[in-house]
Image (cartoon, rainbow, N blue to C red; front, side):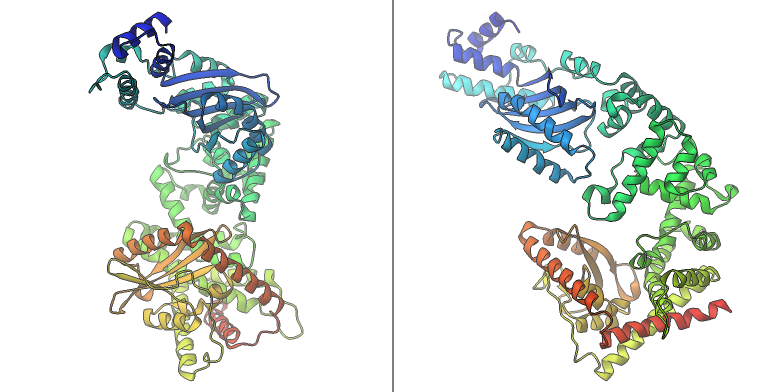
Length: 627
């Protein structure tokens, strides 16, 4: 804007155009929100697009950034500080981001690394935040209405300093002078987009509305400085579901707390390398995910539900379920895919505890395909009724303890022999293949009933009196939410009482509470009437609590007001004030795990005998299945 125009506006609304400081501040007022593009010759940084929202009074800027590194990768950041300090800090931010490239980190870990890098480079006054779910072009940070309010506030501050009265509305002449640039038409945004990889940007325009495409998508297509852009675009045109599978961050890999996350990341890298080198697409995906080529080719360009977040783990599960079915049995529409995945998740719930014995469920075993095909008619019939299917899901999840106990019994070495876990797994799955779903659930119910009888017998005989197990509690005193009183169960005796009263198997969770990551809570009324039982898990090395399961009497669904109360408790316990208690609980449990691992062959306690009795009971129930 011309200097004479700014001076005229300053004279009209602030009563003076001779004061140089006043004119400079008035010019600042007219540019409260503006876009700026910068080019760099730095070895790490190619260009930056800055969308600045200035403070109307102080020299403080909130800036939404898009940094393009020299390798072509885009990053979205939000910075706060003085305008000059932010610009000076960009090369240091770029160097840090380049060092972190390819490292699966949580957003808070990235922010910490960036802050340390700024401190080391002498830019500690700049605050930086990692922008999640960012797009190729930043969204407009403020609306036109908010822009007008900020401008009016700044104008009134200047008028007050000049001894003038405040205005109630922004004058039209000033409103016309303030330009809220459209990022799609602004020169800075156009120059920034011109510097991006044209084929990748063109694909984003076709499929994601142009510059509103997710950064993850653009970075995948234009990665490695655009050298493999053509191959990648061709691959995702052939298999549309492949793009989110390769760009969605696998949660466990991002958080770095599970080895399985790195396995999935390795699959992504293997597929990406095959695409870049121009290898046969279907065969490469099938080899990376260990699936039949026919299944990958069959899924092809079929339409999947648009609201699915198909990371590589979910794609693999979908393809695995499809491979278990004959082509004529596979879904024909979006609703069918949703039903299939729900059935698969319910089916696999019965085997979730087997991950204790093997790293991850090996779904390549033919027995899983055999069971799924045999059980799928009952699962499909139940899926037509939401309430009936929910009940079936819970019963299958409850059966996981029965399956785990049966495997432990089969893996128990005979005198003079060594344990063969692989043989035990094979024998267990072979036996389960011969069971119908209804028969399998009947066996599970029989085992849970027998488990309750064993606990009652031990309680009556007083066998547990000498070896009461206790563990540290995160919730040291009962906690009330509305009419629900929540108590953490801190010893094995409390677990057994809860299990007997609620008619479910929480009484056998002493092992998980004492040496695992489980916390069990009893939800009751003020007069002590039990309503439900909840199991929570410590994740991320004890930094966070999440709900694992929540059941009422006889493993029924928990009442709605109990679900609300438990959600409030989880939020309460995840507060920073409880961080040390959570970490201490986790450290004690890890130490207990090491002690128990060293003394595994020496334990002859009643708890171990009881577990073996549970396992023997499971095996005795399952034995008739082979006849």
